[in-house]
Structure formats: structure tokens, C-alpha cells
Length: 142
Image 1: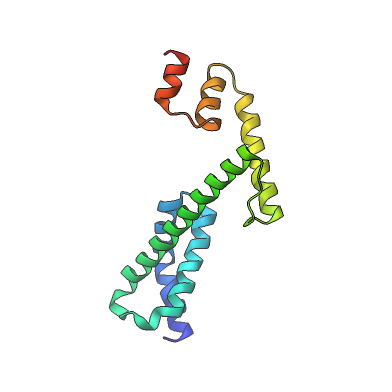
Image 2: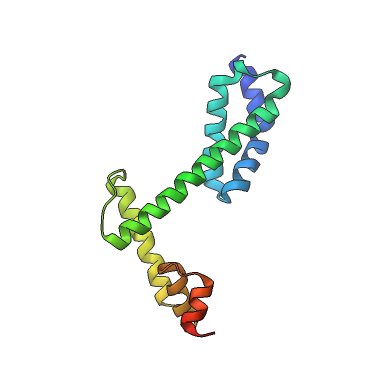
């Protein structure tokens, strides 16, 4: 496939691929990044695909890229939560990433503590202490 043909393919399916990525992530910027990764991956392996199957081929790549992103985002969230509780620094994070993540956590905490009651107490139990709805109900005797 020539570069010109691939450019036409991208133009034809860019909205389709973006939509798939967005449906998974619900984040416009991340969906754009994942769309680019999808087309980059497709570019390297397009010769292995039958031209009649380009659309499902791109859909599968986009879905897999989005699923991989969600897995890594969940993993980062879990690690941040553990680091925040334990006061440890994860060795796989760069200092700027760590700083931004800590700032985000700090901002969320500030917003939760700024809430009026009863929202503040419930939010602390749910978001910060990660209690289940049943545990919160029992603790608040409701």
C-alpha cells in the first residue's frame, strides 16, 4: 500500500476509529491519541490485511488500544492510591508525572473537604476511604 492510499484510508476511517476510542475512554484528547496509535499500528501491519477487511481490522486495533489504555489507567490509579496512603514513590513514574498526580489528588481532597454536610462525610468515606455503599450506610446508620 502506498502512502497516498494509506492517507485515503485514514481520511475514510478517522471518524470511525475516533468514535470507537472515545466510546471506551470518554476522553476526547485520549481518544485522539489512541486514534493516532491505531493508525500507526495499522500502517506497520496493513500488508497483512485483506483490503476488504480494513474497517473491522481498524476497529479491532482501536478497541484493543483503548482497552490497553484503560488497563494502564486503572493500574496507575491503583498505584497512586497506594502511594498516597503509604507515602511511597513508585519507581516507574517520572518526577513531573508524580508531581502532577499528587497535585490532582490534593485538589480532589480539597474539593471534597470543601463540601457541605452530609455530602462531605459521604464523599470522604466513598472516594478517599473507598468504602462500599453498604459500609457507608451502616457507618452512618441510614
